[in-house]
Image (cartoon, rainbow, N blue to C red; front, side):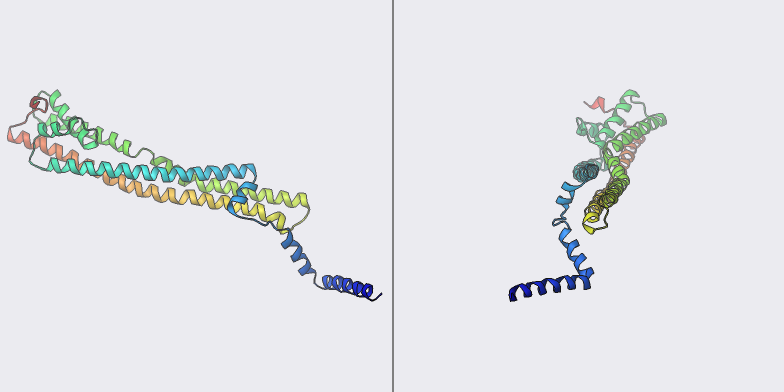
Length: 261
């Protein structure tokens, strides 16, 4: 009989302890019911289909951002190096015919500027006057505008990502919180285990939106400054070509680039 009496006393003490400490009992229950793994990958796998789509879209946008940054950085650096080399040639004591021959077949911006000026000189019949300088200037403006559009291609995507990614992440946040409230309503309980997963998914969507948006804005501003510097080089090239033509005209030795072939 003694072991049975001890067993009854132990059970009675346990029940009395839970009655005296209800908060501890509920805390233990909540801890037991909480999800074991709230890692980012597990939250993504267990997220709602809409939230998963938002996360995948934001991850893809971030990948596009870094791809554009790498591609445009390489492109701008290569074109800037070529433009500086061409500018060094134009600043030397040269003539339009020689500059056209050295850049023939080149597809860079400064080569296109030189070839466009030489073509206009050829179409004008070699007559140097103020009208020739105006026509050459108009051609050079068109070439500069075309080359500027070409080098800026793709940067608009960065602006779009930087402007929309936070709102896309916010949409995922709202959807996750809605799911949390729906889970509370269906379970008829405010247990943390019901609320925590949806809130975690919502916060993850917000974080991904910021991860996609912040680098996009920073990279867009950086590329904008770099492209502006490259456009300044093209403006210098156009000015040097016009000076070259004017200098040849003042010397009375203006020659067509085509005639020098």
